[in-house]
Length: 283
Image (tube, rainbow, N blue to C red; front, side):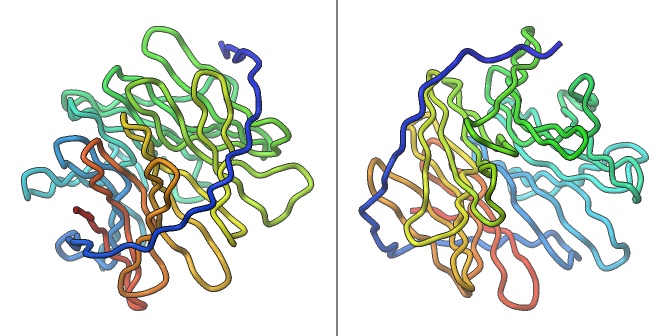
């Protein structure tokens, strides 16, 4: 059963100060033998999860990188698997496609070596992106091309997340206080994408300066956020520290930040023009 959220206010947050990044230490992550590697999440221990594509097939495999060791994550009998989020206990969430066409995205939880399918009741497709230490999960679901976000609290069922005036809402991350982040598409807009932070029932909208699309992918327990924005010919990763924006630049103009932990270590992926590489960024 879907539980409707309480009504909430709408607060516009204008980020006016942009700070350039400097002295960033990057670690490139390539799954051995892969042709592309995407890092999607990081926990406070520095473990990362993501997906990769190898040269022998056209579909994707999930993976965990912990203590320098890669472990492949494939949902049994699935066509493709992507690991999206990980908490400090090592619980992993993600999405898999049971068959190639149509994909029919379905969420999953990997806990103590056991994989469990997660589906929003009454919806066609379910994506899972994030999980906190309490086991609360976030993502979105679709029915007849209508997309809404959700929070699945352990023992409490699903809560709908729908931004005011949105034609589609996506939920990408959740911290241990229950704050959630994501993005949405306003009704009547064909190209605008707006990021948001939802805390204590209050929506804070976040538009990256001089961009047409803003995506917030992660929030840590220090209320720092990370995401990416699309401008003209560039896709820049960023993090927000208080009221400042730290722009992440690497070898090209394509950088996507997917996770930020409590030590402000960031994880995501970038393109060098030939392939996609995962990365970890430290101070």
